[in-house]
Image (cartoon, rainbow, N blue to C red; front, side, top):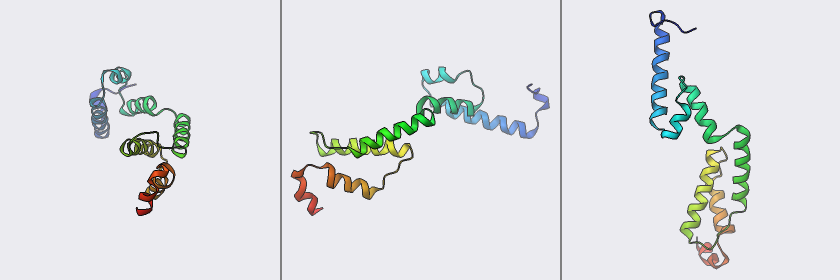
Length: 129
């Protein structure tokens, strides 16, 4: 049963203020679709949990997505695109893996691009690098 405002302790007011600040920060960054999803919730942690589930999914979904992205990383190849386009695609893939907790060391990424991704026509340039 909620307390009357007069019954709030200093600690209750501090918690209420922190919740209000957190809720404000969460709500300010949302668009209309996301806002309609969370508008009925009062507690900031509830809002955070709803948004997290909507955008990241359950732990099982995150694990599956990580496995799928890692297999894409392992089979990554250049697809008739410029070096810049290929590198942008590669960086996007490794950033997605990083956001799911699978951090690939820079040395491994560089080795992958130089030895397994670039076409054979780049062999002289790779040797120089």
